Length: 270
Image (cartoon, rainbow, N blue to C red; front, side, top):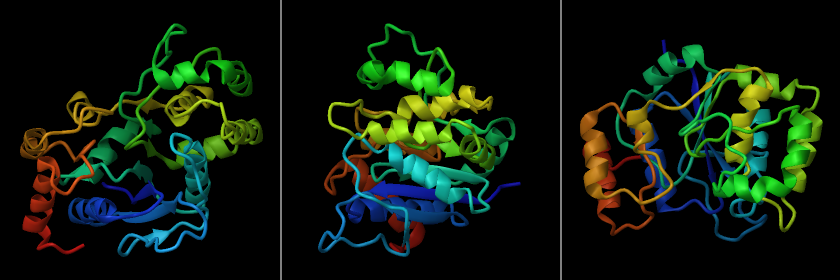
């Protein structure tokens, strides 16, 4: 049985591409709730919220590649709500098929956390950029967590359950971890910390974590941007709920394909 699902989109200035994301979620996950975490400058003139999407009160300005505080704000916010799954989404994601709720009901039966490209024990010699940039801060982080290794994952589409959330917030070292994350905002500190920290917390907290199935992971990557043929292939499979990244360009063929798909299934309505 599908549980209560909440998507949270992180964006500093919602635009037509966030609207596309919302359209896709409304079409293919109609029972889900959607919230917007506003990471843009406070008091910016002319910024609008996505259509029919509530702005989270815990929002605050964040810097590019320094968005880890968003995840902790989101998890603290979600702790007081009865969602079974909380998922972070980004404006270059596109939902293209039904079935994500049913997939989660099955996949999360044995997991507390799900993330694309989840892998344990990143090698100490890894040249992966988030890990490489974290090396000067790594001893402090490992001391907080009581670990001697880190895990890794890709950021868009991470799934958090109440067990992950409450176990984290109730951990005795959570205040120290929050302080570490706050220090990470300083100039010269590492970037994309969430891709190391959030999957590592699975083992630090004694939880269960997993990658998405391989056929889904293949369509959720950093680069290259998906071609229209790639998005069409994922849609035709029927078992790929979303793709990433789709270029934020109204004239790009993949973006046109996505919009045509939404127009054919929703008559252009959000």
